[in-house]
Length: 136
Image (tube, rainbow, N blue to C red; front, side, top):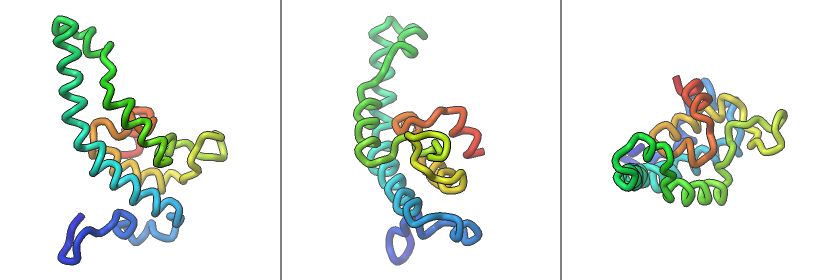
């Protein structure tokens, strides 16, 4: 988001009522998620679509081709998400050792940004059903 003063990071746009419940670690991660989505995932959406189209054409324009295709851009972004620590963010650490340990509120703020891109949820290993339920 931009203003007269330039870009305002996501962590500074957290609703006032939620701020006391968001950790400093979650605020830093929220800013990282915003940059990852804006700078890497949104531009990759068109690459993903093109790779799917090419895969469909290679499979004689069949529906099967769409579901068998696995665009390479997804794997590249998964690797990048893991490097940035943006993997399995939705899992609470009190239930899963792989979890990032964010509360539902903290992850909900991140999910808002992940929803801006067609590939962001998949590349950060978020089950579609969970992502849809928290962003409604």
